[in-house]
Image (cartoon, rainbow, N blue to C red; front, side, top):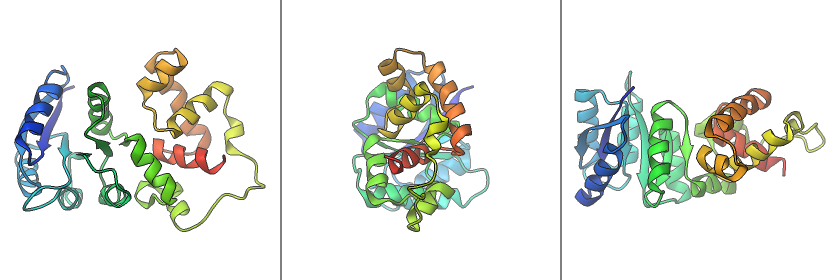
Length: 225
């Protein structure tokens, strides 16, 4: 299946670079470019893309406002925020707005392509610095019930059984790696296994721990350290 993408960035050089990079992937098609959030919304309505690669700081309407507007509409595309800014405020606002991921512009090309694929498929993807930002603040209300509990100040009973004890040693290794912000490809390289094997382990980890996203897993692992 081809992933149809709109690139929203006010810098023409960045748009050109992203078009060349992503367009080289066989399963990604760049269907349009937008120079601000308002134009991205109009193009999304016209072209119904699978994903918008959204910058934050743009004229007329910034990427965060555009993301919120898109998420309020039925049948909205996924939005992957791609920005140079990894600040706490931006990460939190992007995820609260419903973005499927938050990636920095210095992300290696292969990881960016994988992030686009993951976000288009509904899997939340965060740069390691974004994960650190959420963990450092102890807040991630936009990410689901597990994070909402963290934001409200609710913490697991330190005397309660450790849920991570349900994991095998290999699953524990993978969970720890994900908590450090590593992608599936990075985990696979570090553990000398295939990416498919990592995905299989992650599915089991998610089921055992009752989490739905990588960030929920990261929060849980770091909470039990």
